[in-house]
Image 1 (cartoon, rainbow, N blue to C red):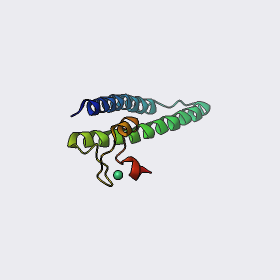
Image 2: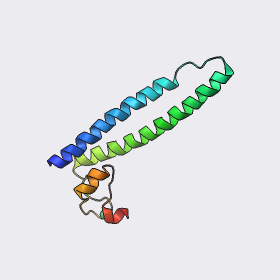
Image 3: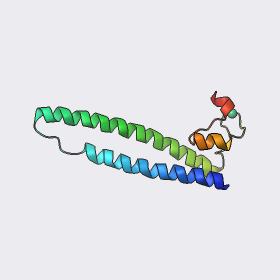
Image 4: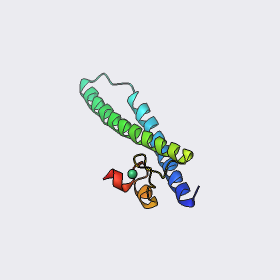
Amino acid sequence: MTTDLTNIKNNLELRKRVLLQRLSRVKSGMIQEHSADWSEQAQERQNDEVLEAIGNESQHELTQINVALERIESGDYTSCTDCGEDISLKRLEAVPYTHLCINCAE
Ligand SMILES: [Zn+2]
């Protein structure tokens, strides 16, 4: 594996750890007991919705990271899934989750 790919992989793994931590915080935030006060309940429900949105977003990004990491492992990371051409390293550094070359993405 080239140094550049190793760097991208390290960045992806770092990001993955951040997301996993965030997801576990979101989960523990959501299972807190709700208070009996109805106005506080409304506030808590709103918080839950915000947490859920953050959770969904993080989950989505995590899936993309896992796909990218699998592609790095299998050696397919730098080839476009559409046309099979190489995806430029510059593009992968800028958009590490991409599986399309610049031509196919456009
Ligand atoms: Zn392509």
